[in-house]
Length: 509
Image (cartoon, rainbow, N blue to C red):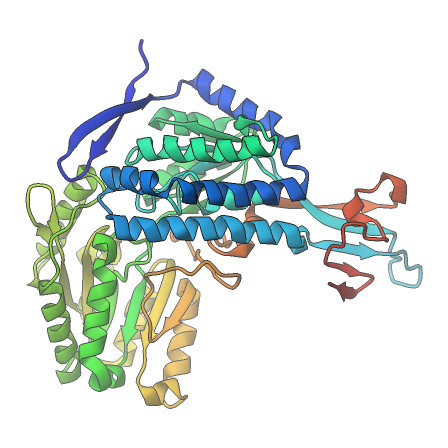
């Protein structure tokens, strides 16, 4: 049987553009993984690794116009958004190159023998080594930053691991182009092309997670797809780490004092955040607790005005469009669910933004309204009107894990007057990133960033954005009593590589 073709599709029309590849067979997946495995030694030198990452960023920038054009044709995200995302991707590659150069990620710790300790301490030297071949499953909504050259790939390569990417079917042509750029960058540094494998097709993704030479995996996508892969990773004869980002509601709490103080600004800000990128951000605020009464009414009016002025947009593919339209319809059929601005089909290929309203009491117990506590991918949010703090707390207590949680406080509450600190404490167990008087859309690539949260937001406690994302692809190893001549240079007393380390309890930089 001939391999199934992989087509590039225009989401603005739903029509096929061109065939860009064929779905990989099990044999082709095996070949890609084995080529990556054979390329491990080429990443051993940190200086080469860092240079490779910087060259990759430079070559992506040099191909910017062509890449952005290809990305827009397959995603309809627009040149402005895509140009910014490509810049973020290049910045991220260079940031990981700096981390590789610095060397702190290796976590070097050296303890000399101490016979006076109880029990005695032998000579121990610990650092971190790469896991091996990393499987990366691309996301649809960030064709640069969470795809072939995205954060999972960049951090895995920085840690010294070759990568095999399962391309997303929404941008297969772009995936091929980006992979070719990264391979050209690798070639400049004597790194074989197999260091970055690329496969297409659903079955290829299944074969990839099962391959015995794959040592870890990173995923960004749906709860259903991510959970299936997570279970497959755990069911292997040798289970592997699976760092999956699956779904998030990203709740927002607006206090009565904040609503009274700046209802119009909060309503407009919420509209901008929930419709950004046609609501296709993983950190879109999907559930917003708004007080009942006049202050909350003013906020809802501001939100209504702002969302009503939002133009219809194109989702990443027609399957997502159908899921959005059907999901909104299912929610609006619930009794006593209002729709001040009705979201749904905006045209044959577009969707219109909107929001739903419901009384908080409907969400305080299990039942049909639990549907409103599930993510609906697209430009819609649910406004929950609460009567008092206890009612808001009850709703929050029923939420699953999230990437973000946000609170909007008044000026006085932010200064420590009222329940601000208490609300912050209530939100902390729910999410990996807690915001005050801001909006969750927009994830800065910074050392202190945490992009991950309790399940189902992610399947692990790590972050997929920021410098510490590299830690996902490393494991610690300790050497005991090894002669200096046999030790890796990273662990020798004289520190020939000049690495940051903890030496006999003392931090050295």
